[in-house]
Length: 298
Image (cartoon, rainbow, N blue to C red; front, side):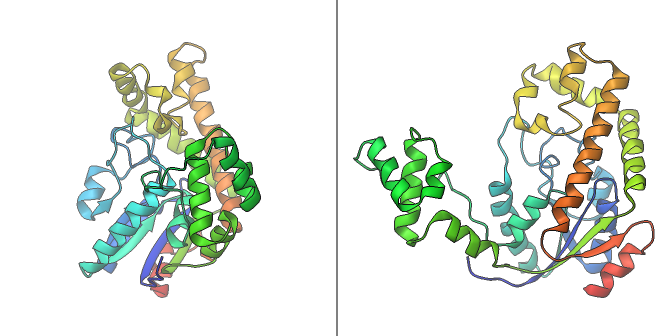
């Protein structure tokens, strides 16, 4: 993909550090629209558990990639990458700035860098050889790709061979080249604070979610579709924990505790992930005037 190098602002950070509030305040000052890099807020009906921007907040600033998909529809990083890049182009063509906000690190990195994802809708010419011979051909040409593919998955084998024959390089070689190529002039900010403070914020936020009606939100989804917990959208923290609760396996106190625990663990993974990813400005939400600090860089 051609390098674009138009400036965008990325507000990443730990769960419960106020990313959305900062993004809204910045957008109002900076003539910007917000793109959500959240794998849960994109779904309709998953409102409280995803800490989705409220209707009031969305009325203040235009938000994108919120309430787009039904909960039974698939959504992944490749879809996000494609749709977010399209939104960036549309917003900038209108003469406005772009703020990407979210805590899903892989989504942000896939957006900023030239990551390549296998496109299921790309037409690849069918091959006449038997699958076993196609797989052996792939082993010879791109053994690393072959290791990740079921020898019986003819469709994926053919796609991998097509990629090698078209580019003349293995999938890992292509991905390494693309991962080193940034596509935007991205000003990346990571919001954090002391671990104990974050954990306390998380615990309080989960309690507040229940006060706001999280249990009823999930109950309504379950009443509409008893298979709701089979969907990928409902595998996210804050929703998946309700399945054993509805089945009577755990009580409400345990339910709340499980959501708090899983969210704290997620925050720890976020911290570890971002420490080893693209360069960013780290801002302590308890010590820094986050909004003013961000404005200095724009």
